[in-house]
Length: 152
Length: 333
Image (cartoon, rainbow over all chains, first blue to last red):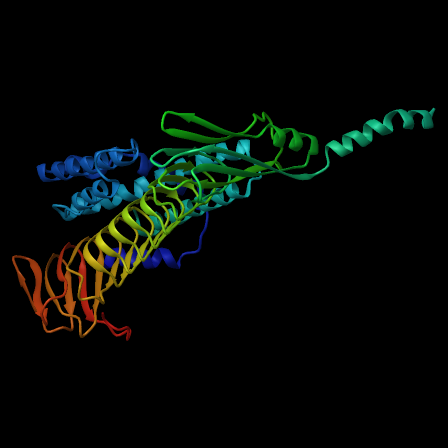
């Protein structure tokens, strides 16, 4: 907890800067690489992964194929939240989960930047698109800061 | 010869100059269609805001305000003329879309968008997907399902709402029925929302005031902050902070699950409550006269104040819990 707080405090204190190219390459490699703790997972870890997959499946059903399903969306979300609320079996699993969240966060930001660049190609001066682009780039810079400051 | 040449080329030069003149052009389009209660309006949009509010009659009315800017007036005018507003009916659904003409090589100054206003008949379900534009829904009570990629979503005075927002904030006020929110990168603000509430957030913050009913909020990297409220709640946080101020003795249950997080509960002195909690590898701090101790590597707390009030249960790992009296001076209900 103290470590996380220290990371957040350090990240908040940093100026928003574009990291050096080699830093970006290193982060990309780290993000693209499979989780290091994968081989060390126990059966409990595998069970946790299955639970995560279940959550993804539930959320996928809830929102990818959203429509007039027999169950209300808030009920599906509630079930997913309760499943997600299961505590990780080990500290290593919890840390791995945090790594995964950062990885997904950054992957989502990168995907957004690509999508917005396609929008800029057809609507180059649209202020909403430009604002979205600036926001996504800012999010990417902030996540760089967090990754560099936290060593993750 | 020079004068003659000038007479020949001047009109062409002027025409070119006029064509290359920067322009901001607008156009309004309107369409309507009868749409009785029980049917659905489904809208797909891109580049522009969407405003939906209730209609007085059983007619769906859609008005579009298009704006095109560019440094080539002729190109902008051609593009504006090519924009179409489409309403197509199929079984119980009316499909609404804005169709943009193709533009192969837009200049860097070129931009366009269409702001839509829909008057939705009573009892009609509203479904919409948008990208690059905000969405506002007021008084839509026939149910709504909204997705937005880049833009904020505001709901007020609606019933039965389902929202998925990727990059934008969600604001919900004075709504009831079933509310499901799935938010990725933006913040979620709830105010005076009742009945069935489920929020699944990932990276943004969630704040709620005066929530009433069966409430579930989960977050991953963002925080959860609640103020007041009634009913039965469940707050789940991984990695984000949780702050909850309870002020109503008619709240029946509060479950808090936290991992790698810090949780702070503020309870007024006069608020009765019953509490039990355990946390692995974390700390429980309280200035209330509660029973605390360590057993089996877990920090535990239990106790009660008065009779009735919420039953608070928390479970955590690598998390810290603090239960403190509310010193904000706000009255308990």
